[in-house]
Image 1 (spheres, rainbow, N blue to C red):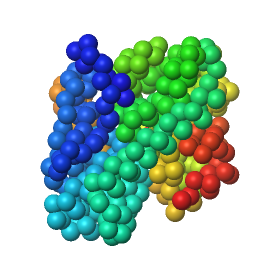
Image 2 (image 1 turned 60 degrees about the vertical axis):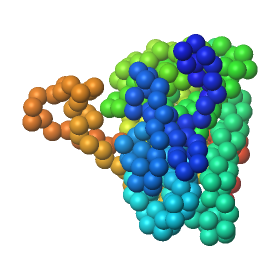
Image 3 (image 1 turned 120 degrees about the vertical axis):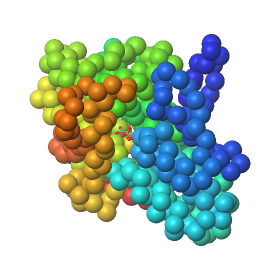
Image 4 (image 1 turned 120 degrees about the horizontal axis):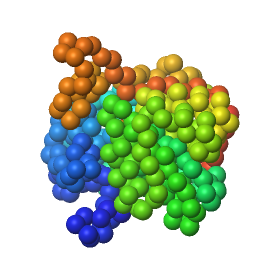
Length: 333
Ligand code: MRU
């Protein structure tokens, strides 16, 4: 992704490996600071995933792939490393897909660092195809709603939901993006807006509860979100708040698309109710930037994802084209 640092333009990926260190853009401190986090052990890679130094399903997968490579290079037991990494965040299917992929690659005797690098490059190639395929859905002048961050930061580069947006902008279409702020961790406000600014894509951040207002006023004509896990019937787990946006979009006749690579699809599950939903610390709801926003002793709940039934989804933007829920089986590899 293009990043402008102190006036200088750079191309950088979300995660990569240098020798025996996994390097990550530290997404916990963006947009205030741009720093690289270094993980030199499987435990540090697991910490980076759990504490959300890195987040977004495909980026979590690529980080875990590098974590498995690191484990092998450090002489760790592969099954122990796999369970440490899998035990970090339960919803994103890419995590499990990547760890299983790397276990197989290592068993086959492939060089671990090269296998992880290939996994990450493959994710980027798929995201670029998602961008091309999704760009066909976007018209000049479209006003597009997105939720959370499904951009380059959430993949390795380019993004999923932001890939068609990036491609449309680069192909000269005049588009505008509504970026839901995405409480409680505000990935929309802090990360999506940051990425769009780097590319010069016109946008505005809106409070999560403002999306319905703009949809009803006719100021949104397309919605594109990412996914953490898609069940075999097309039900989608994505960042909390996605479900209500999809329902309101349908009510207002706005096509609601989900963009994701094959690694996010879990054909072992027949429907979305079977997807494990991560519940994170209530602190993320009660405290903003170190400051309490609720009375002392208040309780809170913090589900990180919700499930949007397939009936609300106009189509799935994938590397194999824009598919209907009946066509998803084409993605099983
Ligand atoms: O909790 P996060 O920030 O990891 O959640 C991320 C999302 O919900 C994204 O929309 C999803 O992972 C798709 S990323 C391309």
